[in-house]
Each structure stands twice: as C-alpha cells, then as structure tokens.
Amino acid sequence: MDDSVHSRPRVPETLGTQTLNFTLNGEPRTLEVAPNAVLLDVLREQLGLGGTKKGCDHGQCGACTVHVDGQAMNSCLRLAVMCEGQQVTTVEGLARDGELHPVQQNFLECDAYQCGYCTPGQMMSATALLNDERIGTDDASVKEAMSGNICRCGAYKNIVEAIQRSRAQLGYDATRKEGAA
Image (tube, rainbow, N blue to C red; front, side, top):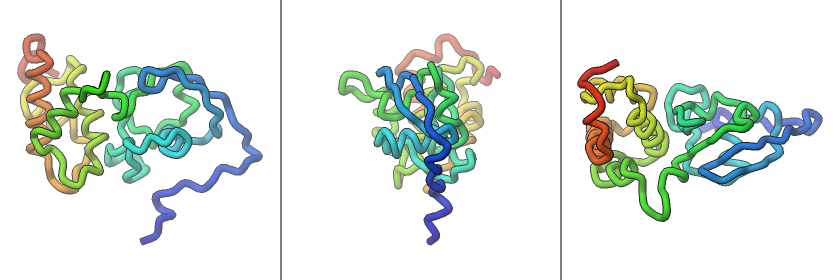
C-alpha cells in the first residue's frame, strides 16, 4: 500500500512559521506552526496526540473530528493558524479528573466500536450533537447528525445506543422535542 496518500509533504523551511496561541484540552498553548499546517497534523505530529485519527484526509470520514470553540469539525480541513485564540478539544480532553466522559463510558459499555479507528471522531461528534439543541432526540435525528462519521466495521446500532444512553444520563431529554430540527 502506498503510504504517500496518507501523509502530507514536508513543508519547506523557506515558508517560515507562525506563532499559534490557543487553548488545547483546557490548557493554554503556544506553538510555532507552518502557515499551511493543518490542525490534524499539528495535533498528531507536533503535540503527540494520537487520539485524533487521520482517515481520508479529505473531510469525508470524520475520524479527525475535534471541537473548536465547542463546534465539531474535521481537523484535516482546518489550518492550525485558524485556531488562534480558540479552544480546541480532542478526545483526550473529554475525560475530566481521571473520569471518562459519559459518551466515552457508554461507547465502552455499549460496545460502540470494533476496530476502534473511527471511535475518537465518533465520540467527538456525539458530544457535540448532545449539546446542539437543533438536533432531535429520536434515533433518526441522531443518525442524520452522525452521518459525517464513517464506521467501516458497521457499529452504527451500538453507536446510536451509546449516544442515546449518554443523552438520558446527561438529562438532555427534558429540554428537547422529538424530531426537532
């Protein structure tokens, strides 16, 4: 298999770097980054955070999903310098004080993964959809909201179950209407 499909060419040093100040998983960070470096590569290569996965590198699979200022987005499509002054959360930042986020715990308990490659992106999209009041509480609305995340193993039924269990535990049902859009 040709690995060049999943790796970006190294940036020539003549491009220089830019200083990036942002908050990562609750901690202020300052980095020197190439102006054309995508957030995914900075997270994985410069910061050593391997939870955010490189899948398609084209924004189609959702494996690289992170939160930027609370919004789920594909980190493979966002230049790192665009995160200046913003808050970025990766799957490593969901757990607090050594305790898994309810979505993480429910993915584990509901067996909402098989190979696990898509799981971090699925979890990040799931936590974002739980905080989005425009998304209905029914399974069809959850499936539609998660449609940007591909699971090649086909664990979709268990992923929806984990999300719905998390929704109930976090008390989101009380404020949302079925099928609200």
